[in-house]
Length: 245
Image (cartoon, rainbow, N blue to C red; front, side):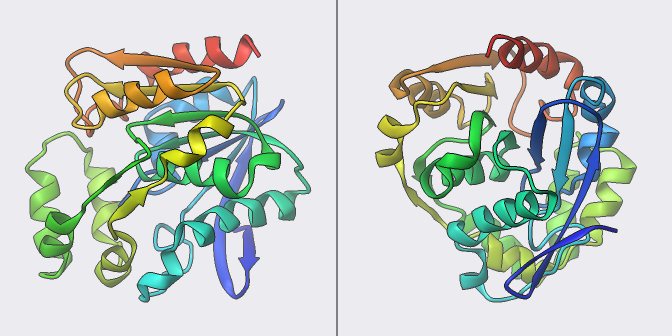
């Protein structure tokens, strides 16, 4: 398996497809395998060179247990380490949920590496994760009981989640500060989207309205956890956005 080494932390990634580079970054408690399972890779690999990254603490990447190891600057530098490993100068970037948060970090800390940003289910105005940390303190089974109640994940996705390291997840899921000061400088083309019943939807739309060059799409009737599995709904908007650049 290919790895980039970011100052001693190994970041697993995979590359597939032909065309302009497009980074795909998953959300919290997920892995790059989700992009395959939910059909994104199959739908996009003929048009783009897809660079799929397991965020640190997830999948086959290393899993430090110290919260400071998951500062946004480190998460961004993991992406740039992968790009450097592949000798890719600039890329389109697509992140969902936590991956979207990392996307805002890319705009703040690695702007020259971006051709465009696609951000799903995320916003830059800050967010508390105290409830998630409280559950994770009781271990991975407590977390899985919480996740399974949502009723949206396949057996394969649930199995991958169960293999995660609860101490790493607990270290990752720190409260996110307000970083909306980065928005005026985000002049690259941006596409933001969210399910209409996602608690982040209104803030994501507010963000899009504050960006100089952004489009916002809302998916009626879907919440934060339901939209990711529906690549057939999301990919047409992404394909149209990227084709317009």
